[in-house]
Length: 347
Image 1 (tube, rainbow, N blue to C red):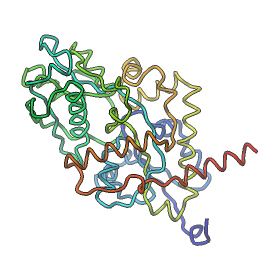
Image 2: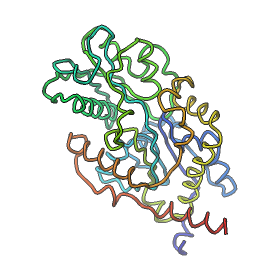
Image 3: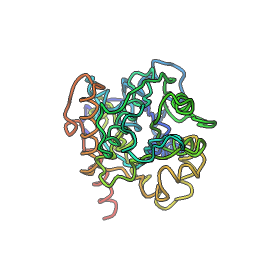
Image 4: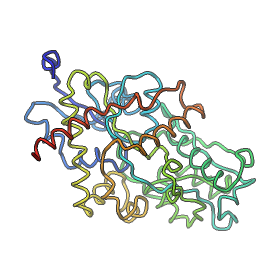
C-alpha cells in the first residue's frame, strides 16, 4: 500500500449474498470474516441484518462504500450498466437446474411441443427484475433447442411478489417463491413455466410436473449462462483503490472456501441447504452430488465469456439502459495478490 492508502481507516465492512450456493455465503456461515478482521477492530455487517430499506437496497445497486456482493449476476451487471463504480474480483460457477415445467396431461414433453403454447413469465416489483430475466433466458434457450420461433408461442405476464435480498427461510409449500406461476400452471392459464435451483426442483416434484427441459444438461456452458452462472463477487471501487489489502484479505477467505468445501462434502450440502431454505435432497438434485467440488473462485476464461454472453443478452432485451465492457469491469489484482502470498508462504 502507499502511504496515502495506509492513512485511510476502515471501521466497517459490509457484504451481501443471495439465497443460493456461493463461496461467500459459506465463508459467512463459518464465521470466517469475523475471524479475519476481528483483531483489527473492523466490524463485519451483512445487509440482511439491517431493516433500513435504503441500506438493504445496496443488495441491488451496490451504493454502499466498503461493501462486497456475491449472488445472481443480473443486479451486479445492471448496477455497472448504470455507472456505479464496482469491480468484479472473482467468479464462481455452480450449474443449477433450470427447468421448464408443464403439467403431465398437457402433451408437452419436449421443447418442440411448446410451439403454439402459452408461456408464463413473472413480473416482480424489484429495482431490477432478475427473476424475469432468468425465466426469459431459460425459455428462449429452450425454444431455440426445439426449433421453435419466439413468435410461435404466446407470452403471458404474471405479477409476483418482489424478491427479498439474501438467504430466506422457507421455500416450503407448493410453489415457494414460484407460487404465482405455479398456480397459473395448475389453473391452466399457462402451459409452461420456468423454475430453477433447489426450490424449483422441489416444486417440480410436488406437482409431479413434466420436466420439458433442464438447461443444466446442455453441453455448452455459454448456453447454460444465466442469472445464476457465473456468480460474480463485486466490490466498490473506493475500497479497492484505497485499501486493496482489506479487499485481498476478504477475498482470500472466499477463495479458501474452495478447498474447504472439497474436503467437507456433507457440511457443504448442509450449509447450502440452510442458505437456500431447502432440504438437502433438493440441494443435491438441483446442484449435483459434486456440489462441494464447485465452490472455487477464479477468473477463468469460460466464466468471463459466460458473464459477457449474459450481459449481452440483458442489454439486447432491454434490461440494461447502456452497454459496457465486461473485461474492463474485472480487476484481477486481488486474486493475483492472493496467489503471490500463497506462493511466498509455500516457499
